[in-house]
Image (tube, rainbow, N blue to C red; front, side, top):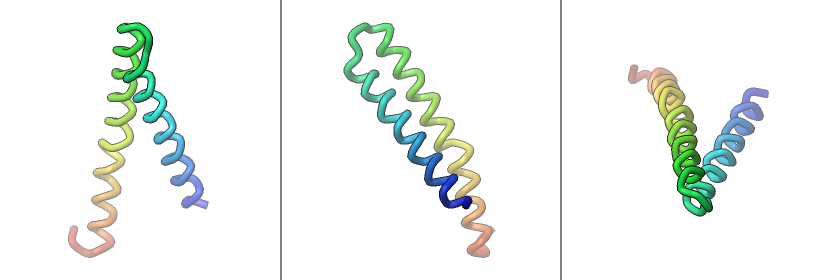
Length: 66
């Protein structure tokens, strides 16, 4: 059950990041590109910031290193 949840979350975040990157790179107006870049930074920081640190801490704890 949890595997499906995390896989779905990863796919959802990947889709959001790819769409924001697409708009940031090929947007028609400078304002829209700037907004898409801001959203891209927000999603990327949220997905890889705290979650990445928590995952690394759990893995190190399981391995007996933390």
